[in-house]
Structures are given as structure tokens and as C-alpha cells.
Amino acid sequence: MNVPMPSHPPLWDDLRVLLAVHRGKSFFAAGKALEMATSTVARRVQALERALDRPLVQRRSMGATIEADALGLIALAEHMELELEASRRAPDIKRVTGTVRVSAPEGFSRQLTRMLARVQDQHPGLAFELTSESRLVDLGRREADIAVRIARTTSAAVIEKFMGQARVAVFAARSYVERRLPGARLASALAAQHDWIALDRTLDRLPTQQWMSAYGATRFAVRSTSPTAIEEALVAGMGLGILGEAQGAALGLLRIETETIPPPVDVFLAFHREQKNVPRIRVVLRELETEIRHALA
Image (cartoon, rainbow, N blue to C red):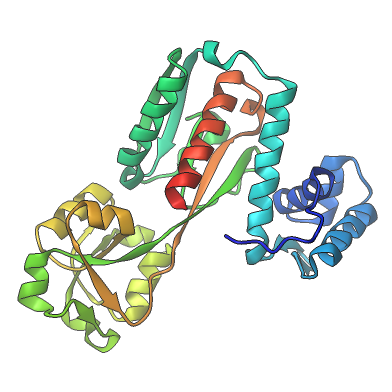
């Protein structure tokens, strides 16, 4: 995400206030977290908005939210925060040891495993327990140390770092295209005539699922809670479905041209607030953040 910057880039002291507003969802909560008056928080945010010459925060009676195009600043602030913490409490990272439990959606586990292998190359004293499932593990109850997520949590005990967006598209097997969709172009008016492969109805709240329905999909040949099952159904030529761009290409599927593009998927790195200074957790967070941001670039 490209974020216009002023001639003098904002310093950590400016960005940490914006980050606190993002995490606390209000100026009051940000002030409490920073031990700063609410009015001071408001002035600091206004000063940053003037410096950038654009609004950064939506102010509402029930709280405050960060403007969508300002999330890049939040990511920058979170990166600076991690770097500052690392410099303050830097252990000998080559000697970091222990087991780190990582959770991710099933569809992301293949790529995540490769990332963790590279992390282990740098830190051979680390071991990993990887959990892949459709439900959100409860980080508040320490069901995992770190989670890669595509949905946000409501727990105040959990810190979520926005990593970026995974681009997605409609894909199908060559056999399906040759049989049902010559030209690999699908008009929304014809979507109801095709077979679709989708996640289970319990996940219809996801933006990609909502796009599918809005585009006209009504006939579902396969529904599953398992992204792996969806991949297999697509490869078998059972219908059309939405996958990440890199994922679809790796499976040898054909990208289908559509009138509108399915919304990208937000990706977050989450961890328990009390875990952020544990050396092995901090090291894995830093390495995974670099890996995930690179993968989404």
C-alpha cells in the first residue's frame, strides 16, 4: 500500500499515538494506554493529519477508526514498534530456543510451512507446532502463540498486525473451461448457469463469499470448510471458485475473467499481548512479518 508522506516523515512519537488510537478504537482508550490526556491525543492526531494533508481517523460518537488508506501508516508504526523493542531487549537471536505454536487457515499452511522452514534455518534452536483449521484459535486462552488470520478478533488481550492483502481471482480447471466456459470469460448475467465451489455456508460472512453471491452464483457443486477440499474440487473440474492468485497458478488452474474483481483478503499476524516480549515469540514474529509482507507484495 502506497502512503503519501510529507517532506519530513512522521517520527515514532507521532505514529505511536495513531497506533494507540487504532488499537483502542477511541481517543480515550489511546490516552489511557499512553498515559496521555485525551485532548493531547486528539491534538497529536490532528497535527499528523495536517502534516500529511489528509484525514487519518474517522471520528464517531462511539469511537474512532483508522481510514482505510492510512493502514499503511499503522503497519509502519507496528514495524517501528517491533524494531524498538528488539533493540531494547535484543537477545542473542542465534541462541533463541524453544517451541512456538503457530496457527493459520488451512489454505495458508503450505506457504506458512515454507516460511517457518526458513525461520528455522536462521534460528536452529526453534521448534514449531503448526495448527491448520478453519476456526479462529483462542489466543486469549493461549491455544497458540502466534496466529495468521484473515478475520479480526474482538479480544482486547490480542494484538493484531495488519500484514497486507492477498489478491484473489476466480479460477477453474482447463477441463471445465473447455467444457462449459470457452474463452474463460464469465459475465455476471451467466453466473447462475455455472457450478461453483465455495466455503461452507457458516463462512458466508467472508467478503469473497459475499462477492460470489452478489455476482450471481446460485448453483454450488461443492461446499466445504476445508480449503484443501476446495482446491481438489477445482482441479477435478467440478466448477468455478475463488483462490489466491499465486495459489491458483501453482495448481495449474485457469484464471477466469470477470466483470468485477473479488475483494482481496486482509491478512493479520496476531499474538497475545503478554507474549510480545518473550524472546522466541518476538524473533518468530519479526521473521514471519518479513516473510508475509514479502509474499503479499
